[in-house]
Every structure is written in structure tokens, then in C-alpha cells.
Length: 240
Image (tube, rainbow, N blue to C red):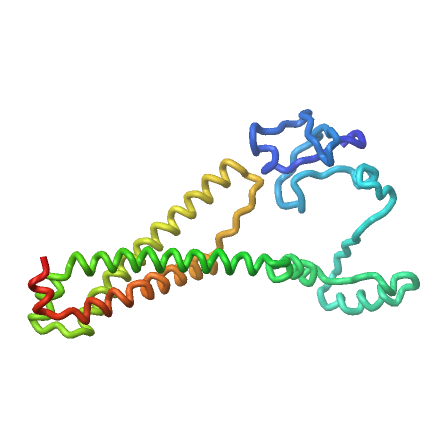
């Protein structure tokens, strides 16, 4: 960086969109900056500019909003914190560890985000429930004669319910596997198309989504299964 309006960008940003190269001009806070170099991602930001220039653009020249201290041993965090707060003029400063700071970035700390997530999950469960309910209800109606044959051969109500639920389980598992595969394909496509877009799909979320989908599907088939088990074998055999 040779001047106040030079910037460094990481390789992810450099490869995004049409691509960026050393010497190109980019906008930071609506001000043009020349790309002076490209660094490996993982340094805390996509774009790096002079802190003095940043303060000037933000109207806080000569000021800082936060200081980061690296301790030699995590055991020393508590005494360092006490020493900072004991320094005259720093008694009211907020001091927190990196773990405490990161905990503020969780969904629990973002207003209404958990509510929005719960609403989306509820809508997905309701839709899945209705789709499976309609599919299995139609299936039971179409197989009325087959159900009558099973009952006339001595199949119990529990057996009929089991047949319907097992078929539902197979369809649900196939749907979950297909949905997860498509989700990872979409994630891979978006990651290639928009390298700076962060998409989090961890194992916990996948397992949670799969469990919700499976349970919703099974619940949606309970009434059709119960309806199939209650059919009279004589009426079922006469059904056309």
C-alpha cells in the first residue's frame, strides 16, 4: 500500500464476479480505492484499508471503536481484565473475551430471528403434513380393493396401519435424501457463483431438518392409515 487510498483484498473477493486484479479500482464507503495487493482469505475481512483513511471516511478521525489484545495465556484473561478496569479513566469501558463477543452474534441475540426461523419451520411442517396426508389419502382410496383382499385374508388393523406407515416412511426417507442432495447442490452452485456469500449447512441443521420432515410425513399419514384399517372387507372387495 503506497497511498491513503490503496486497498488490499483477499483472494475470495478477487475471484468473485468478473474478477479483480491489482491496479483495479473498487468502491469502499462510496470512495474509489486502488487494489494494491491480494492476500489469502481468513484475515478477518475481504477488504483492508488504512485505519487512518477509514477513520476519515467515517468521520471519526483519530478515534477507535475497539482494541483487540492478544494474551500469552488464556489464564491471564481475568487479571488483565481487572487491570484494565482498574486503570484511571477506563473504569467504565466494556471489556470482554472473544468468546463473549462472538456469543453476541448468535441467532439468540438477533431480535426476532429465532421467531422468523420457527415460523418458516412451522410452515414447512404444515406443508409437508398436508402433502403427505393428501398423497396417502388418495393412495388408500385407490387401493381400497387391495385393502379388502388383505383384510379378507386375515390381516389385522395393526397390519394395515403398518403397511401404510411403512410406505410413508420409504417415501419420506427418499424425499429427505433427495432434498438434502439438492440443497448441497444449490449451495455448491451459489458458492461458485457468489464466492463472498457465506452459506452455513452443518450436520446439526441437516439432521434437524431431516427429523422434522420425517416426523411431519409420518404424522400426515396417521389418519389415512387409520381410515384404511377401519374399512369393512366386504365393502372394500365390492369397491370399483
